[in-house]
Amino acid sequence: MTGFFGNPRGEQVLTATWVAREGVRLVSSDLPDAWVNALGRVGRDLNVRQYGGVVERVDWVAEYDPDSGCVLLLSDVTVLGRGPGSLGMSGYGAQVNNDEESVVVCIADLVQDQVARAHVAWPWGDTGGFMTPRLVDAVAFWSDRSRYTMIGSL
Image (cartoon, rainbow, N blue to C red; front, side, top):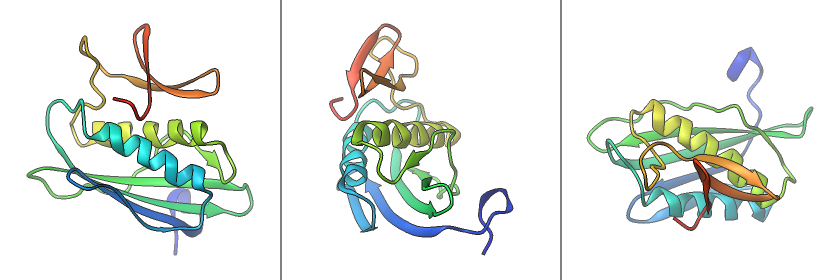
């Protein structure tokens, strides 16, 4: 089976779903706890600060590339009143053994991109505009111009 960029699909090492009323539900995972914890933190933030639509569901699939040790994370966003989109990816990547903060930024960046592709703004800052995920002194934050909020605490 062929994956992105014509490469063979990697081994599926994680599947999870976020639903507004339930939060993150881990379907399966062969990844370290940092990945599961990171999904939970991003899932908490999905419950707030959506603007221009309502995210109903987010699905994640992670595939492992043994040659690079990289985990390719894919996500699909369903907006209330519309059907699901399609699995997409972002520019960030993570290694299997990355720390939780790095994984949080990878997941947050992916979900933010996929939510934007679904025409919903998330996360939306207190003063308007998008917030972006950043690592600051090895801690994952949302950046809203000059203000920072730890991911998972919105």
